[in-house]
Image (cartoon, rainbow, N blue to C red; front, side, top):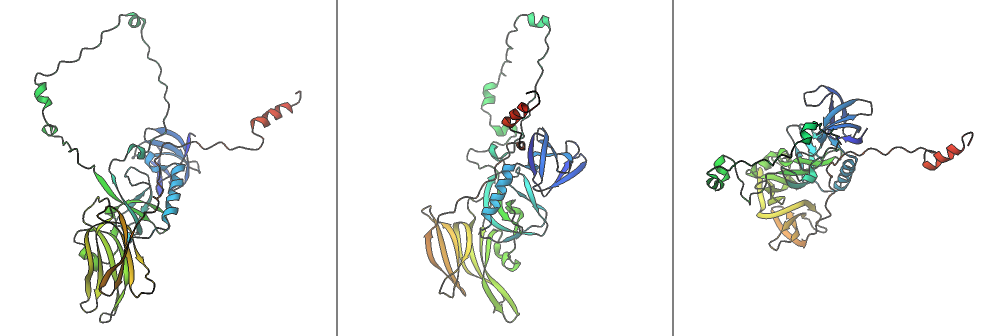
Length: 380
């Protein structure tokens, strides 16, 4: 055994040999402790507690430090307010970090819901520190045998480099596009993804691709999104429609007109249900803002109004918490206070290898105890 790892996915398949087409000989569940036996590039051979030995990809394994980081992330995110429930229409992986190459330790089933609690934009290609690294294996290479004739010969001169082509000057002025390759402009941003920090019904917290999540606001409200992505939504009280004998919610939502924004939304809107017209109408809307989580409801002591708050970056570059009151069709801003973000959530560190578990110590096994045992032997 060279180290200890933990199963990352909800179900980790172990294969008999290297490669995805090899026969599956066993499995492990998320968080199961595994003994690391061997490493071949990005493949790792592990042994389960029941003695099953098999191969898996490095990205499917978590180190002990990562397991502790995941528990710390879940504990810190347990008190964060939900920005709305979201659902998926196909199996979706939850990752330890907002990168596609990071271990996936949980899967959202088709039709299941999660709470959205955070957002981040990260490049497709993660920084080197976020890429799992296999445990280095030291390989000893035998020295090459050389004949006595070659070793006794004269030293060979260095090779002569080939002559440059005659039109080398013309070639040096050609653009990259001439060869069919695309040369990105110096100011082009790298390809990136929108990630959502989600919390499952059983308290698991991790990162999922935001474009794969659909906020569960009713369709009769979502139809007004106009192609924008709904990033948060909250109910703002109920309205009784006597003609239809129904009870409807008023809603606050935030939307993003495009992806990969460095903030969470650029517009917010309040919808109210009209009992007379039997459809939703806009009571308030503000566009062209730079808004951040959290979006939350606020108690307004001594007032009949409902309250809600948003965090907006103003023209001076500072964050402010705006608090609004809402009654009927009327929305008004009550206060605007400087906002200081809370401490950042714990990060899940990248895998740098799987350390071997410390050898268990038993009473009487120390160096001093061994010396005493030798002196007690007969003839000493």
